[in-house]
Image 1 (cartoon, rainbow, N blue to C red):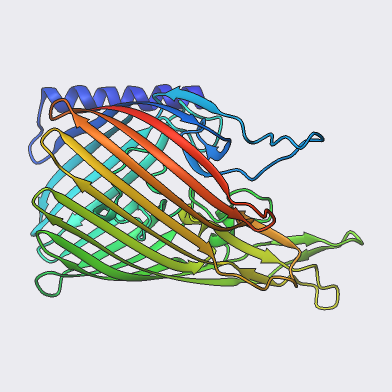
Image 2 (image 1 turned 180 degrees about the vertical axis):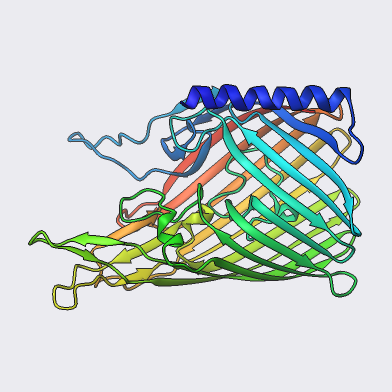
Length: 407
């Protein structure tokens, strides 16, 4: 089934590509884009990672054997081209003073670990642009993952787990009431990037069975060389739908957990300089690939329910790029901390990096542009994590080589 699906999609994309270069229909055009990407990486230590190790987040804590040897202090490396991407922009022309277009974009990283080289849907949406407003309906970036605020590194993790990273089904409205002021409002639903649930895996049904869409509101300032904003999110999830009690009764669970988060960000550009930074603080942020989740109490046999407590996480990052002709040296810094201090009444933890107290990353890079479409990038990551149950901080290094040809 999966192979058939891949053949069908690739055939359609090939047909669209052929038509894009061979003809234009009145009022309707195609524009195919994407890149071929090859990556090699080497880690000095095992990482928590998916997609064959390409999407790496943090070093694993020590795992000692009977001899006291750390089984996670083992180097590893790999090479892959599964991040290769292709997309098609569909121009539907102008209707009633509005421009209408759509986007379909895929890559080959799959939806879970071990699925590299399988086709994955990244973006699929229809957007309508008026003079002072834009309406987008479909799958697109999480509102906390702003295109203007993407770190300039070439790593697949894109700055996670410090930089919010995820995509959602959504209805997204941007409105510019006056010059340089933008209001972004979004109603969205989880799918591939979902909150980790009581089965210790991503479970989008937790969010959709709450019957409350994820709600985002952002106020943004936009000019030629400066972009800044502040935004907030409200999210509701129901961790359990049913529960089988020790006496084999299946109970319906109705507990809903409410999560809030807020973020501030800016991007400043001047001549050859590009500086970006973002900070976010909030509850249960792992659907954005940020460390955190929630705790669950023991089952209350008197009231027949569970109690839940979301983690509160603070994450921040800064990215700087300097352009020197064909060379672009850069630096990405990230820091994250778990702000929860009292979880003694809870026995289960579900989330991402729940055993991490704080973690930081220092990542210098050098990009060399051979021509306008082809570039090579060398990146080094220094990773340093403090785990709650480990006295010493855990360090790790990652070296990555990236070759990208854009079309």
